[in-house]
Length: 168
Image (cartoon, rainbow, N blue to C red; front, side, top):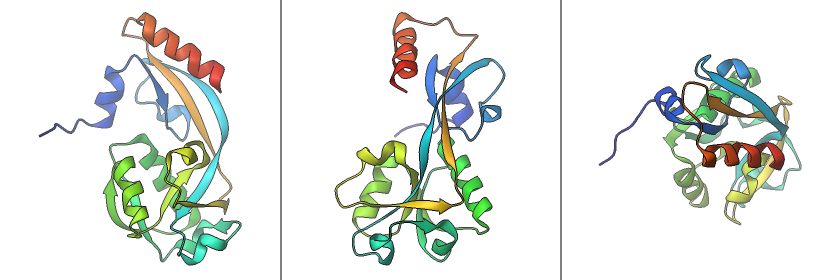
């Protein structure tokens, strides 16, 4: 058995972490120091090879309004961003299941549905995943590195922060 901890509590316990927030204003509270590290990630629709969208070079997200979506669980920061993107596209998605990142990929491989992600994590998917860039809405996904000011930073956390800043 495991305990589900609300996202904000998990974030507050961290010393340093990568932020999947739509804007700096969404960092859980003002005890955090954040720095924008990357704006190059763009939205992608991920489908299986036999899906009708698999041969497309790009797509407007609104074209996928009737599709079955496999969503990331609400405990993840990316879910808030994803919900805003669907709102901007003008529809409420048909979410057939909410799960973690690993299960989402497995369900895609089994052709249960399609999903929304960013180009930043494209390499983490299986070879069966087909990525279709989303042209509308045209959004680049900002990534932040942030630190809880109330928690003394360990050497390891400092090194991680330096690595993330230099990597991006």
